[in-house]
Image (cartoon, rainbow, N blue to C red; front, side, top):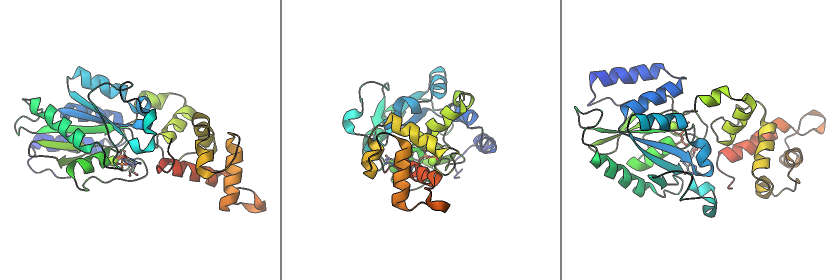
Length: 279
Ligand SMILES: Nc1nc2c(ncn2[C@@H]2O[C@H](COP(=O)(O)OP(=O)(O)OP(=O)(O)O)[C@@H](O)[C@H]2O)c(=O)[nH]1
Ligand SMILES: [Mg+2]
């Protein structure tokens, strides 16, 4: 972590945050406090589900500026994105994969930053832009494209960014990369439902999910025909049939010529989470 040009109080703050690994909702609160502008990175396929009402309420309460960044537009049929509704302004639609929308986002940040007279860290006159969002939504990827080089680490599996990283965007603007944050209330809801949702949103890795077959079944219910079309397998919308046929095709077999359902379901989730399957 680069801490040059940083006040002693700030160093302490960052160290405290590092100790809080695992308590990400608390960490989110701190990031909002430290920032002048917050980029909330959303998944364009699941804009409402990836919004974090808790963080948004805090941002409003503390009178901070927010920009909604709807990422991964390459994974959804452009006609299916409701660019007007769902998410309020200011918002930008981007695709890190196709490098789309980044210039517009950079400009929006600069325009809003220029209107801020007294930044939180006023002794250095630096504007802090905190980047928050669900695990795997593309926070680090957005930062890398904004600054034009790979400084923030990215990975296909969720939970990659563990601490806070401060990265210079311009002379006057610093970005803060942060670990993915799942709203508090989603820890307390039905466990099964939450696991399925988090896996769908790629916040829980295909390699870690306990019941991958259930997740595939939920995914196929929500996106009828998408998976059958992708694998070119007819399964009448039934996940068990898809898993059976795909497993056999891939040669994922256990003793007694049985299809290894767990392994096959994980492959499907992996393809989904790695952005191979478009909706
Ligand atoms: N298809 C597609 N994939 C993207 C896009 N942006 C990011 N990704 C991929 O999504 C995965 C997660 O990206 P990261 O930038 O590491 O996401 P993050 O939000 O920082 O993740 P954590 O630090 O784990 O919370 C990586 O495999 C990226 O390549 C995009 O616009 N389109
Ligand atoms: Mg990250």
